Every structure is written in structure tokens, then in C-alpha cells.
Length: 253
Image 1 (cartoon, helix red, strand yellow):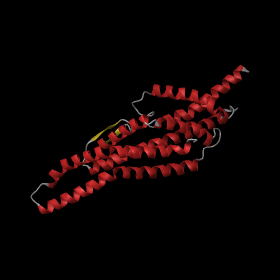
Image 2: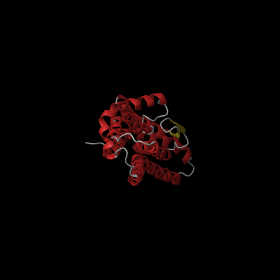
Image 3: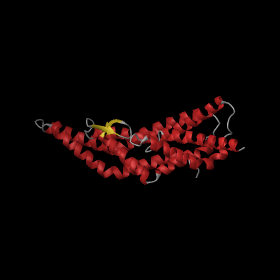
Image 4: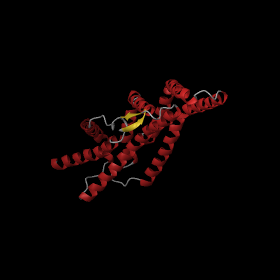
């Protein structure tokens, strides 16, 4: 009797760990390359152990065959990766917005390492991504991400096949929303760049002997940095609102 109870508890903890661990592989902040993998694994185990008693009524009984166990684990992995992908896509919108800003402010040739994306990116994109991660933890939005993973057990019951069609539809909507969010964030820079380009073009026609491109480069960079300093609070507020709205459908209010 004790052995069966122990096996059932281990199976429940394993099942919860699979979904939470898969989500943490992609959730912003938790999945950053500079977070040690052992720390990430320990955090996922701790969260799984805390969450297991709360979600145990929704968990299925331990299957009899290895094939059924494999299907359940695969389904939980897909659900966890789906929730993590949503957060990663919203955060990736800042990388796209950073490239828009870089092209508008003549900083596109200056690339730097983006630690959150583990690749090279624009200076503006790296700065916005680092600022967004700081805001996520400062505003306790990481609690919202974890709450979305935990409350997802009421939407996606373990043991049932994940709704692949709904997942594909929502990912498509999130991708479209991220491009819109990127353009909205970069719109002040695009507008200022258009006005500056028109002014420089008019100046070049009025003074053909003036080296317009030589003058325009530092002017574009300076104005771009000034616009970034002015619009940064609004940008972070807009991003935090979009980030919160992306996870609210999974949270039981």
C-alpha cells in the first residue's frame, strides 16, 4: 500500500515537473542563457513540488503501459512549450522593434551581443530587452507567468490530447500581435526619422555643397538617443500591458 502511494505521488510530481520544466525552458527570464541550468532545474523542481498538491485532483491515474505514459508526458511537454513560447514571442517583439529603431537612428551597423536571445542584435534591441526583463521581475509579472502555467491545468487537463488547432491559431495571433507591437514601439522613431530625412533632403537641395550625409549621421544618432530617453517609460508600460494581456487568458481570475 505504501509503495503504491509513493509511486502515485512520484508520478504526480513528475507529471507536473514536465509541464513546468518545459515552460521554463522558454519563459523570459527563467530561460535566459546566463541563468545556470542547474539553478533552472532546481527552481522547476521546487515549483513542481509546491504545485503538485494543488493540481493533483486534475491529474490522471498512473497508466499501466509505457506507451500511455509516453503519450501523457509528450502532451504535457507540448503544453509547457506552448505557454513558454507565448512569453518568448512577446519578448522577441522588442528585438524587432530595436532593429526598426536602429535603422531609423543610424545605429544598424553597431551590433552587440543580446544575452536574452543568445545572438547578436542591435544596441537598441539589447537595451530594450534587458530593460523589459528588469520590468517583468520588478512588476511581479513573473508571478503571472507561473500562475498561467499552474492555472493551465484547468484549461488543458493532463492525459487529454492538446488542442493542436487552437494552439496553432493562438500562436499565429501572437506572432501577428508581436509585429504590431514592434511597430507601435518604434513608431516615434520612424516618424522622427521621416521628418529628419525630409529636412536633410531639403537642406541638401538648398545647399548642394554641404555634405549632408556627413552631418546627418551624428545628428540621427543623437536625436534617436534623445527620443529613446523620452519614450522609454511609455514603451515599457506598453510592453508590460501587452505581456500581461498575453498570459491573462490562462489565469483563473
